[in-house]
Image (cartoon, rainbow, N blue to C red; front, side, top):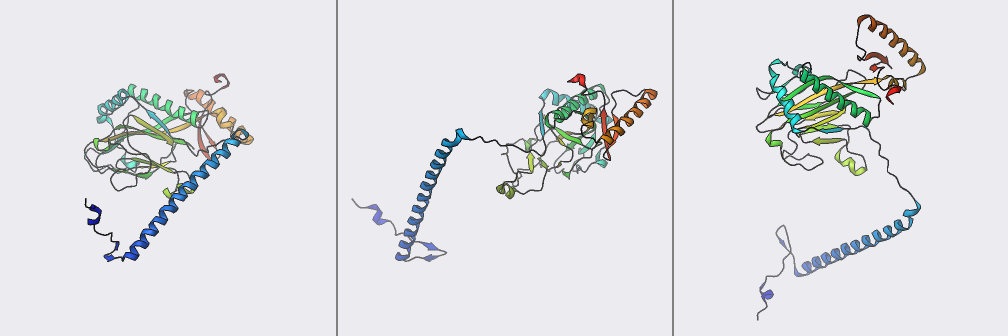
Amino acid sequence: MTDDKSKLPPVVWTKRGETYSEEEAEAKHALGNKETMMVGNEVVRQMKEKERIEKAMTNINDKMQMEIEPIPSHWIAQVKFDKEIVDLINDYIDETADHTYSYADRLVGQLKNDERSSQVSFDLESEQGKEIEVIFNGIGSAYLQQAYKRKSIAQVVDIWTNHAYAGDYNPLHDHNAATQGGLSGFLWLKTPDSLKVEHKDGYMNGASGVSDGTTQLIWGLRQRQDIDALYCSTEKYYVPEEGVMLVFPNWMKHQVMPFYGEGERRSLAMNWAIVDSQQQLIDNMTPAEVASYHENIESQKMQRLEDGTSAEEPYNVIVGGQLRYVRTDIFTAGDA
C-alpha cells in the first residue's frame, strides 16, 4: 500500500510571500512546541494553586467571618403593569387627545420627525385621571419609604405623554423638582416592532443599531474601562417594554435614543414632589430651625382656618434655604 502522506507537499512557512528554509521551519516548529509546553505547565501551576487556596480556605472558614457591605448611591424602582392597565391608559390618552395641549416648549425632547410626533399634557382632572394619579402617588410614596426609609409621601406635580416616531429622540437631561428633592419616572405604553428584539444585558456601544430606541440612565462619569479598576458602572441602557415603569431621583440624567422603522414609541412621563412628614423634617433640623418651623406652621394654620384650606394640603416651609412641603397629619405617633 502506498503511503498517502508521502504524496503531500512539504510544509512551507510563509510570511508576506517569503518562503522559509527547512532549518527555519524546524526552528519555528520547535518554538511552537516550546510555547505549547509553557502554556501547559502554566495551566498545571494554576490548578495546583487553586487547590492550595481552596484547602487553606477550608481549614480557616470556621475560624473567620466575611461580610460584603453594599454602599448604594441611589435606587431605581421598576414596576410592571398588567396589559389590562396599559390598555386602559392608552385608551384614555387616545380618548382625551383632542383636549390636550403641547408640552414641547418646556421640554428638551426633539420629537418632530413625523406629523404625529408630539409631547402633550395628560389630564388628571377627570375621574379616570384622578384614579391614575392615586396609583402613581402610591408608587412614588412606596419608592421613598422602601428605598430611602423616609417618612414621606410623593405627589405628582407634572405629567405628560411622549409620542415618538422614527428619528425622534430625547437628548441628555434631568428634571426640575418643585421641592428640594424630587422623583422622576416614565411608563412605556407602546413600542414599535423594530424594538421588540432580544438584547443582551450590559453596554450597547456597538454600531449595529442595538441601542436604537433605548433609554440610557446615567449617574456618573465613569468609562467602561473603569470597571476593570473596580469602579462600579455609572450607566445603564433600558430596552423599552410595554407596561414597565421606572422611578428614580429627579437629578439622574437620562436620554432616549432615536429608532428607525414603523410604529410609535409611546411613554407617560411624570415628576413627583416630596411631601415630608413633620417628624422627617424635624429630625434633620437644628434647634433654631425647629423653633422657626413651629412658628411658621402655626401662622399658616391660622390662615387656613380663615380661608378654609383643606388639612391635606401640604404646608410650604423653607429649611436651609430650600422649599420643602410638609404635612403634619402623616406618620404621626398613632400611625406607628
